[in-house]
Length: 297
Image (tube, rainbow, N blue to C red; front, top):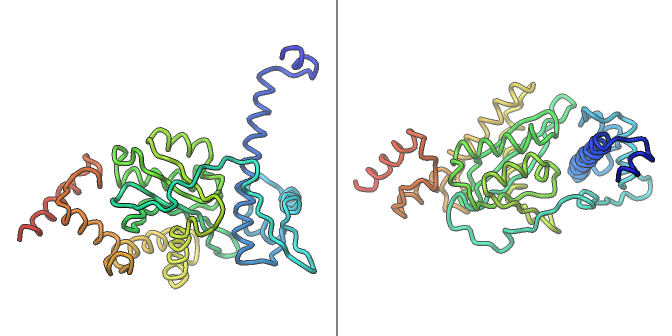
């Protein structure tokens, strides 16, 4: 290898730096193409230039972005507009672990997705993590860019705070093929937690619960709330999630809200344990005692 480095007048350190930069660039391209694919579902004829203005990637210029779109089949053609899905080529894919699975308690399966919200001609990115058992949103984030450290990672850290690190070991985190879910940082965090990564393999409906959640948050709450700027969007987003979790009845939950369904499950099973919330949260211990009192009455 030394002879090879010498032949190209390159040090070993420089070689690995270039290799790391190449890997980061490919990861970033995969994330952008993933978002382009989502935009095209709603805007089949939107040009790469318009998408660039809306996404405003911070590390890629307009010409390079347009070339990336054209090279991957996202040019707008006059006669036809075939959509080519390329985000699954040459990137990491996890097996789909939730196909035909029966979820019997909280903290077993979480589904997640990233969607965009257009505000004043710019895209903002909303990440949600939902407990599939009781449909409760347990992690979320808002960002003006697609980087994992501003989308999936803060949403996952919120999940850890709400449910407790010790309760997530062995749980499945399921998503579609977005690069934010196989970034080094996200994988390192799920590995540290002992969680299992899962992804869609073929069809969109393999992550249908997360897709529907995104639609509900945007169509039933954010659009009617009409946020005017990013700060009001953040407030509206938090309010939407609270309303969804605490006041929206779900047919799949026998007409209960996600929080009501979780609380009822605790009472019905007399399982006042730490599999729902972290031990260190005093408020939750008080909540358990109150629930037990209600059952004894």
